[in-house]
Length: 103
View 1 (tube, rainbow, N blue to C red):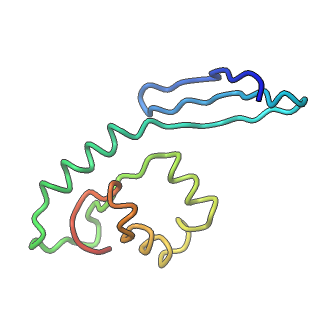
View 2: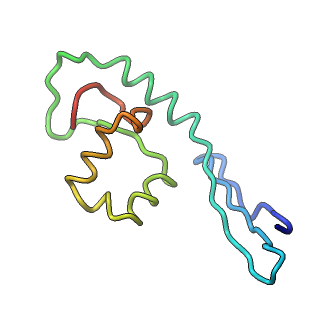
């Protein structure tokens, strides 16, 4: 692998874009996002919710970083309500949830 250079960094979203020279005449653009702030905020909101409270139809259930959202969009998960619910309820994705319970 050749050189890796920062193309851009957005401190508000934590997104950094890199340009990678693959060393063979090709290049790759890589997008990375620091999710620490989002995950910490989600934990606080999750811990502040009462698991016995009934939530309405328009209650916030998750906060998903943009890079994760676009990956889900690319896979078609965001556009498939059943698949999106399954993804949100998956214990592996609990750090994105902002309240207790099932979607």
